[in-house]
Length: 283
Length: 127
Image (cartoon, rainbow over all chains, first blue to last red; front, top):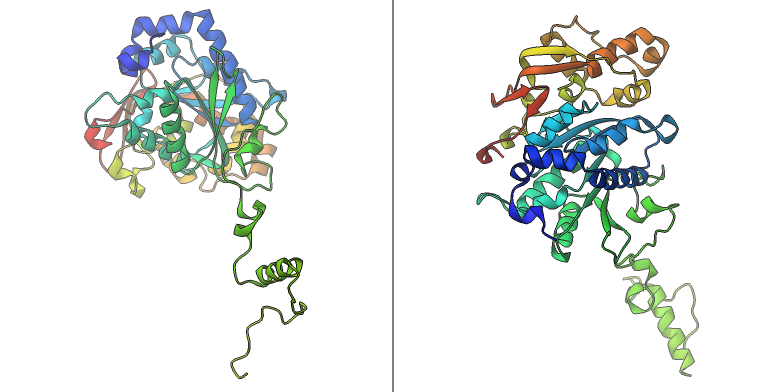
């Protein structure tokens, strides 16, 4: 299947006819809706919030944010930014409730620090991997976007970016850029190894682990059904067994060595409170 | 462009990132439209501590609203007084700038607003 990302820039690809096609296609509408609901589920917002929608397009995902029922923590207020004027035009015609902004996410996120409770982005971030001009690079655009996004979210906030990476390289590039900006990042894969695989980049901004938000990224999916956590990060030092854990020359290390020697049948002095202590200089 | 967004938007130009004058942006030749949107009290109370009240006062005066009180209203005061909450909702959520410009006091860049959408696209030498 051809990827529009490979042929044209986002603002040129989504011209008037593409924007209308995109918005009126019931198939796309359904997919967008289900992805937005999934993103909302991950965001886990408890009360009506201010949400940034990056790449809001014609406001398909925004409508769902507005329509969120009070018992699920809604309705949310959203501000959307998109680079395609045609898409925003369709959004205007559809009379969406959110506020719209014509802006390029690769140029940064022009909001003051700590403005938003959460951010979502549905099928947009992969566009950053295609730099159309000679004076920009995908890495630079990704960095500006994630730096700006990180700053514009309040502490303890979450962001969910659903995206379609072209290959593993793009996936790594996007995830790395997010981590470099300071986010706690994890990838959630729905329907893995099928044609309908959906990839969500789940991001957290600092925050205390005490209130159950923020903390470790794997905590985000706690309590969600059918989610397996694959953690490939190196474990913290205190979990390690064997040599690395005990510092050489410490009392624990000496005691360990003495036990080893004892097992070998060597004569070993008994361990006391003086074991491993430095002698006084006056000795 | 709603006033609530105006309270969070800064100038996007790179050299303005470190300047205090890049926030707030100042509306110029603004044509206002009043929408009818349902009051979302929880959301307003939620963002209340994050509002930059001084900037909101400046913007409200610039847009021709009566002057706001000097101090940020407390959560309790708003919860008790529905009229205050409605006024705030009217200013922040229901008021839209349909046409006009937003001007940065630091670099002088003008962001055009057309049909309620502000254009924050920058030429690449400003990014």
